[in-house]
Length: 139
Length: 66
Image 1 (spheres, rainbow over the protein chains, first blue to last red):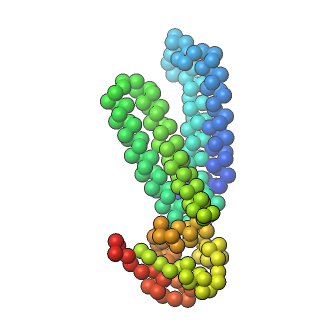
Image 2 (tube, each protein chain N blue to C red):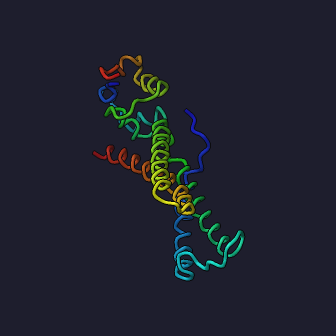
Image 3 (cartoon, rainbow over the protein chains, first blue to last red):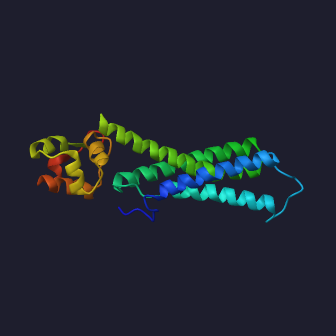
């Protein structure tokens, strides 16, 4: 079974690096302007929007590359684990989405959550399963 | 699905790593197949059988649950 296109092995570390890099920027911005910044500074392609866009893109691309990079040895079990984890991630994402749609009207944050949850949950579930298999071999 | 890969390996005196390399999967995959945690595809099952020079049915047998 041939998997679909995946990033090369080192993509995982590049991805983690991008996610890690975006954290200090966001923290710095929050300290500088407060959580929501200057409310007068609204609209598209202004300072606030550009900053939000670039940091969010950095994080999203980082997570994306980290999630979909090859393992050292790609075999059919890895492919199956990846698909299983993806299904789990979609389930969890929709659970979160439905709960937040019912109990919240903050669409901006719902969207943001929706951006994060599938990839983060996918990465955690996938790596956890690989960790379990590695631990099994040492017993 | 049950299998007797562990026994066959002992007879042929090859390690999990050797078998993994010969059929082109990771050692983890051979380990999970041996401990019945993962059911291999037909292609992989046939490759494993070929390493031992036997038919697939001699190595893999259906379980009551299957």
